[in-house]
Length: 237
Figure 1 (cartoon, rainbow, N blue to C red):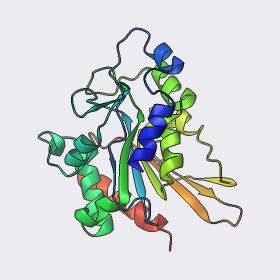
Figure 2: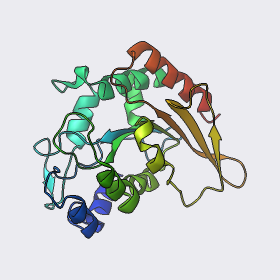
Figure 3: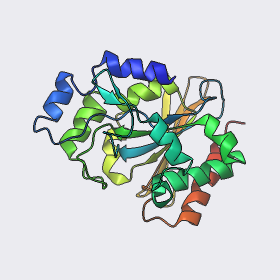
Figure 4: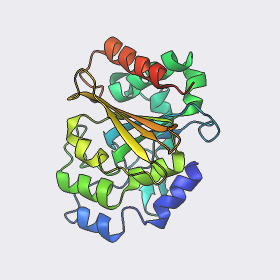
């Protein structure tokens, strides 16, 4: 699946096509960063989860530069998710996800085989914080649609968006080719947590979305527990 996604990046000349050139016309953005991780059983598993962050952080220098287009971040992503990167334990994006996977699947080593990790926006402005301007979000998510192309290839059963309110309008534009009905499930606090379900014409679930705040500055035990509870509630029986 990694090869298929990388071929997709090449087919759209990520980073060098007209949309990308107009997006980065002042040269302030780093090079595009690939998907972070795809578990070895993702293609065959019936219980897959895609975790999605906001803007890719760390692009250049963390992996090989492929075809002068994008950085391969998969080794970096796996080491970070394994908590073997020096700073990974201090990054909630990795450490909270690590614990969610361990609790939901029973062990981290087994669970990582069924998950993937990526970001909505593929380039960053060299900040460790998400300071992505609306113009970059528009170009990458709505116009070039890289994240949606990744999802079409991966076809995950559940997606957890660690993106907060500022990306909701962009997620609302997601229109998978094979769904027939979309249901929004209103929770107690839809401002920080919402759930969307996509059904086929036989009312079978194609995919569930969960949108929460980014793990940073969230209490770890409660955050992890709430996401695991949702995964258990939405697991296909």
